[in-house]
Length: 237
Ligand code: ADP
Ligand code: ADP
Image (cartoon, rainbow, N blue to C red; front, side, top):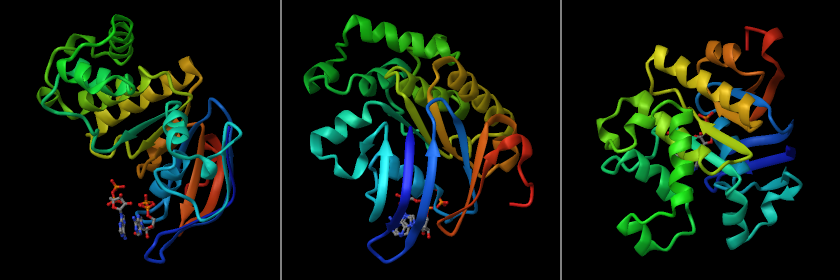
């Protein structure tokens, strides 16, 4: 469960990005955060895995008080949280399989990583994740030879290989064409259902949020202005 209690986030330059956020997300929910550019969507998502520190209030993730985590605890905590970005954040000159392996085996010594020596069971897990998102046949292809949709699937596989309880996705379909965007949303929904993973994503395409997610949270100038199921959403937000 993710729980925000009166959370505030103020950037060092004084920008108040989140004001008194109160929010509860249960395990297995598929939630879209919508709002205009600058509303605070990305900040909200990034507080959950401690990419940003909050300034006041309490943020609990599975009963862990995120603000109190230190160094090694943060790394341990993040193992349960997958992160997906608009820009995929892949090593484009590496193969698909290597991209999945390198980040899904985070504790491996650098020399083994550099030589590309990965434990057999991790390789199997990585290949399973690639199969899950339909790009197993691209395992030995270099990432820069793939389409945008395929690259986002690599990022998704990389996250899935770690078997996270939570996936945070910052505009995962923003750079994709409409058809590919829909297919990635379909993958996310299927993964949400099959793995009971909580998925929280930022999206500026309201129609996609309504079509695929179960719940939508609207934010404006750092405040929640709507929170409800997608089947009864007020189209005017
Ligand atoms: P969104 O994801 O909805 O576009 P953001 O969370 O990125 O919104 O930004 C919320 C507000 O915080 C905006 O006013 C933005 O300019 C500001 N902001 C975001 N990141 C920083 C930062 N690192 N330093 C200062 N202000 C920031
Ligand atoms: P994206 O759309 O991919 O979230 P942004 O342009 O919103 O990218 O932000 C890119 C980076 O710049 C983020 O790390 C964000 O925190 C930071 N940022 C956004 N707005 C500001 C701002 N007003 N001042 C400083 N940093 C900012």
